[in-house]
Amino acid sequence: MQPQLPIEVNEETGAWTTDGLPMIYVPRHFFVNNHAAVEGALGRDKYSEILYPAGYRSAYYWCEKEAATHGLQGLAVFEHYLKRLSQRGWGLFAFESANVETGEARIVLRHSVFVLQQPDLHGKLCYMFEGWFAGAMDWVGQNLGFSYKTESREVQCASEGSSECVYVVKPIAA
Image (cartoon, rainbow, N blue to C red; front, side):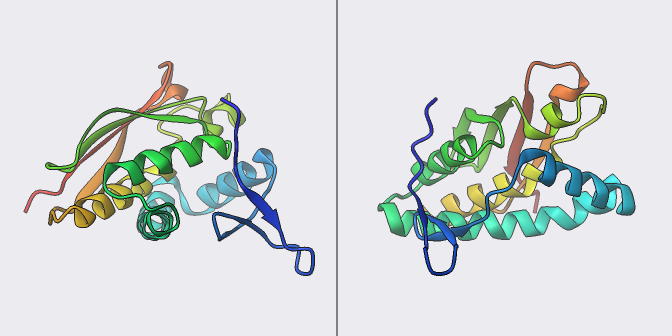
C-alpha cells in the first residue's frame, strides 16, 4: 500500500494537518517507549481503563470530522478510518466482518506497531485500539439512526504467537 495522505505544513507555525485536522508526526520508537513507560507506571489494566474512553471520544470526533470533510456516511466512514490508521503506521487494519444494523464487527490488525516495537513482550499489547473501534462503530450507528452502544475488545494479539491481532466490536448488553 502506498500511502497517499494529504499532509500540509503551515510554514508560519510548523503545524501539520491532514484533511484539516492537526497532526503530530513522531518516530514509532518514541511513541511506543512513552506508551510503555506510562503502562509501567500505572499497570496495564489501569492504563487500558484510562485509554479506552479517550480513544473512544477521539475516534467518534474523527469520524464526525472526516464524514463532513469527505461527504461520507455510515460504514464508509469506519472503512476510511481503518485506511487512514493503516496509512499512518499503526499497522494494517481491515474488517473481517461488519454489521451496522447490529453494531457488530471483527477487525484484524497485521503488523501492529506495539508488537513490532516490543518483540520480547507477550500478552494483549494492542489494547489501545479498543476504544477507537467502539467510538467509530457508535458514530456509524448514530449516523444511520441506530441507538446501540458498543464495546470493543482485543481477543487475539500477534504478540501471543498469532499472525494478527483481532478485535471484536459488539453492543453492550442493556
